[in-house]
Length: 133
Image 1 (cartoon, helix red, strand yellow):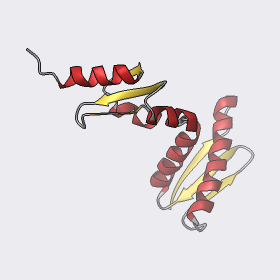
Image 2 (cartoon, one colour; image 1 turned 45 degrees about the vertical axis):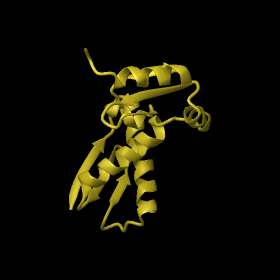
Image 3 (cartoon, one colour; image 1 turned 90 degrees about the horizontal axis):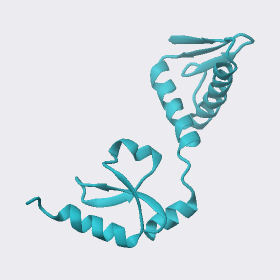
């Protein structure tokens, strides 16, 4: 069993993060139907203690759950606009020869991102397919 302790600090932002971590651990444990042997944590007055045989794996999974909820903020209107190629942020992926939605989770795949309408998309695609002279 591996253990980590997050101690209370004098920094209100770090302390808030520790409380948020406990919230997401609760949710993760419930969603995954984990037993106390698989994941145990306890929020005490001055620290959060987390125990698990898969501690790093679970903390990483919880980190990504938190990140998707907090940072992937695309709205249904933005998705609809992107499907219709209007008022949207797109990037051209040269390896796949296509334009894709620029979502926060795809930042690392982004070769470049452009704000464009339907005409700009067509012209940029034509330019990208031309061979250099």
